[in-house]
Image (cartoon, rainbow, N blue to C red; front, top):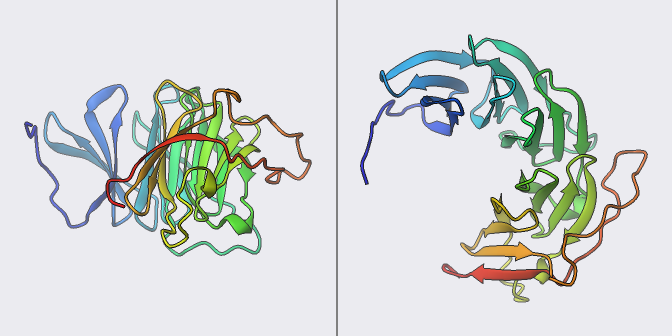
Length: 265
């Protein structure tokens, strides 16, 4: 291992990092104090500091098509920055559904679709997809309260699906273009039946080339890799569209194929 450079010793702490897709000498560094530092590794210099959030930075995503950086924070806000002059183009607050109260410092994650235009925003109360750079006309999906909060979500490698994990240890598979729930995997499909474990996913990662395979990182240190049974071939089918844009029907899938690393169980 070789340490290329070390810089910007805290405080404040760095809470999120993202390399510029067209210049890997440029790193966007989200900070605990809500600022974003644009750092040039080659010259060991902070080019500029971006200020638009009110709480710590929890997500950063570059679009190399739109030449923008989108940031998200624990203030449930999204900001769009032009990467040419680093000026803020727009900002949006997530629309928290009526009757739900978000945690004061709930993380918001952001990820660009393969088309580098549609933006996935993940919050404990919802999944939202925006069209960048203006962040107009968001599509939103709100999980049923029985599932608990969303713990993480990500696009599949082909961006056709969104994998979503929940506090009750279930996993949902949404069709990304419509945000319709196509399939729901219950915890009994991949976790031992021992109720004392009470593990649930904290993070979910999509396979880089298999669009129906993903991995779950669990609260007990375990890691599960899930894919559909060969007889099914894919995760469920798209249910009929609902006029109210709600969660839609779910199909419980008790037969998911899985492998589990129980290193810390």
